[in-house]
Amino acid sequence: MDNDSLTQRDKRVLWHPCTQMHDYETLPLIPIRRGQGVWLEDFNGKRYLDAISSWWVNLFGHANPRINAAIADQLQNLEHVILAGFTHEPVIDLSEKLINIAPPGLAHCFYASDGSAALEIALKMSFHYWRNHGEVKRTRFINLANSYHGETLGALSVGDVPLYKETYQALLLETITVKSPDCYQREAGESCADYSARTFAHMEAALTKHAGEVCAVVIEPLVQCAGQMRMYDPIYLKLLRQACDRHRVHLIADEIAVGFGRTGTMFACEQAGITPDFLCLAKGLTGGYLPLSVCMTTEKVYQAFYAEYAARKAFLHSHSYTGNPLACRAALATLDIFHTDDVINRNRTLSAQLAQATARFSDHPHVAEVRQTGMIVAIELVKDKKNRTAYPWQERRGLTACRHALEQGVILRPLRDVIYFMPPYVIKPEEIDGLAQVAWQGIDRACG
Image (cartoon, rainbow, N blue to C red; front, side, top):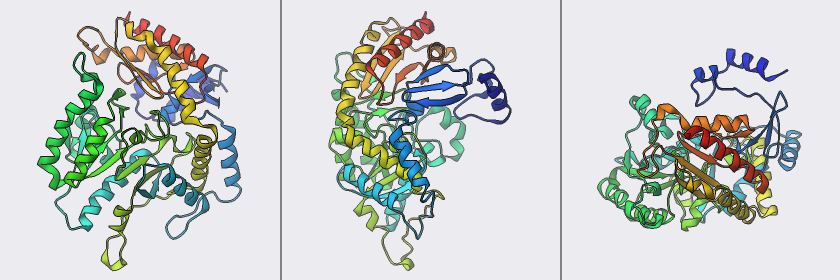
């Protein structure tokens, strides 16, 4: 078995996600045979550093022995059971542990598989909450420009990716979109905190005008990941929590990509000292092993649905694999690693190493900005640095840089012309330095 034979078989039968399949006429499709730590290996024996944590999910390395052992143990006892009318110990343990570490006040867990499914739950639950309270005019949601929350129809509706909106507009909910606090847009000499606070006026105006028809505000705390890794200051979250309380509107925090230590704290909301009404988690929840997501909410929301059957207030939502025991055991092992290995403090050292390794990129003639939040670093490529003029998107400069990295054994995936690092937490300092050097070479090739 080798790369070429598997690639040919693949292209005959598979349709890959987030991909123009025609690209594989010229771009390499790489079959992976095994993984260990931050490294993946193809069928020809070439190794690749997984600098994007396999789409932001892998926290503690591939084939992690502790997570492996937990899943293997669970497999001997119970692989799955319906969660309607039944329960099991892993899902109870996981719920207790999540409630213990989440922002205070979150008291109940509703499980699904992928992140967009958790977002769908939060949207429906918020809408249904107001309906159960007789406020039937609340049918809309407020989102941020440049946001992304998944690709099922509800989640897609509250995102703001132009290509998706243009393509699927006829199927989507009508949302109220306000200016993002994205600090890339700040004035020269203006602090990120000042800019994020200043742009909150747009959100305040939208809430003032539409509060009576709005169910919730949906937000990605601190980093708009799929939106070119644009970042903003925690002050925005503080102001938003206060405004949602004043206007009696729910706050949905999508921490699917930024939760579990990625921004420097266990959850990004901690940096603003706030508790959302709904917290959506996925990706790193199982350490990158199995699909599992959760929508956490408050006792107040839970009680709005708790009634006699005849009252017809029950939440109407289900998934076949809700609370799957194998996935829950993987999640429990992941949380145990956080606890026993002091991961959050250790990540501060790795974050400093990432900052040091990428500091020189700021001086590159085609880098407009190097930005970092915790274990996320983003490097924005531009045609004209002085005016921050972007390259035409058709030139795919970011892709050129990442193709070079792949040739050198580093997996990067561009967000248009933004090169980013989001590595597993087990990456070593010398691997960070090597990653940065390869990225520098790739950017030179792409922008030369």
